[in-house]
Image 1 (cartoon, protein in one colour):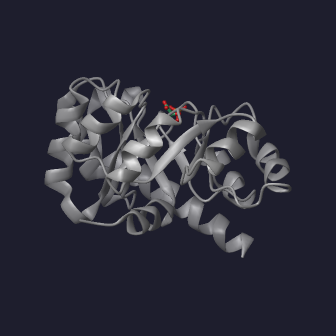
Image 2 (cartoon, helix red, strand yellow):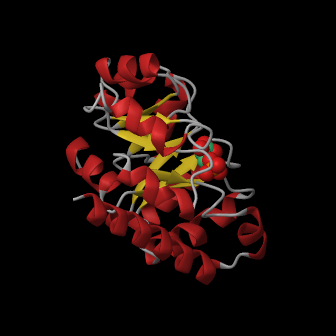
Length: 218
Ligand code: 3PG
C-alpha cells in the first residue's frame, strides 16, 4: 500500500493525469495499459464510465504498482468511499465539495478538488485539498494561473478541461504541478477504433511536452 505522500509524488512525476471518460467498461483496461506504456502512470477513471467501480477494481489489480489509479467526477462522500473500497488511490472532483476530504484522507488518499475562482481555490487548500483542479481550465488559460499564483503561490494547481498538447507546456511554465488531459489524449475516435498503439504514442508526447516545459522553468 502506498501512502498519501507517495501517491502525491506519482501524480506530480511526470505530471500528466489521464482523465478516462470511456464509453464502455471493456475499453478501460487496454487504454490504461497503453497510457502506462507511454509513460502516463496517473489514471483517473471517471464515474461517468459505465461500471466505473468495476473498471477501477480491474485496472488497479491488473496494473498494480505500475500505475496510480484514481476516481474522477466524484460528487459526494458515498461515491468517494465506494471508489476507494474498489481500489482508487486518489480522488478527483470537478467541484469544491469539501465533504470528500475527510473520507479520502481517512483512507490515506489525496484529493484534487475542483475550483474556478481564487476564493474557491484558497478555501479548498485551507480545508486540506492536496491539489486544486482548476476546472474548466481552457477558458482561463495559463495567464490566469500566473495571476492566481502571484498572491497564492502555495496552491498546487492541476488545470483540467480542454488542456491539450499545445497548452500543457504553457500551464506547466505558468506554475502548475501537473496537467489533466481527457479528450485531447483519449479522444472519442481513438476509443471507438481501439487504437491503443496510437494512444501510447500520444501519451509519450504529452509526457515529453510536460518534462520539456519543466526544464525551461527551472
Ligand atoms: C473532465 O472532467 O472531463 C476533464 O476535465 C477532462 O476534460 P477534457 O476532456 O476537456 O480534457
